[in-house]
Length: 115
Image (tube, rainbow, N blue to C red):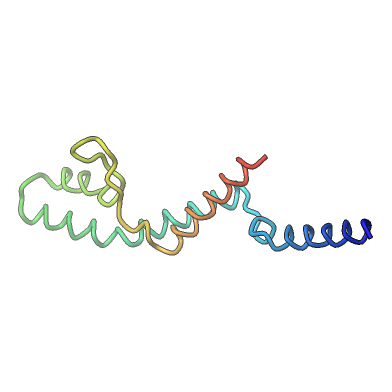
């Protein structure tokens, strides 16, 4: 009777291990790095027209030189320090590519922290 109970628990643990998220989707550092590149490429694609409009508006208003306007808006939409020094989060981190990357990074960090 004890042997049957042991086998039942063993089978249950094997099934639980196979159905765990870590077993279904094992994330490697290379996967996270590739996803990061896709995220940043998607963000740059989304930010490009906004940066171009802001740069053009700066040039048309002739408040600064063309070079200054281009240099100033090159990083528009990225994380930047706020008035208190705390980071102000950038734009387009909610894109699917970025959400997937952030989730994969968290999964990898959790997998590394488990004994």
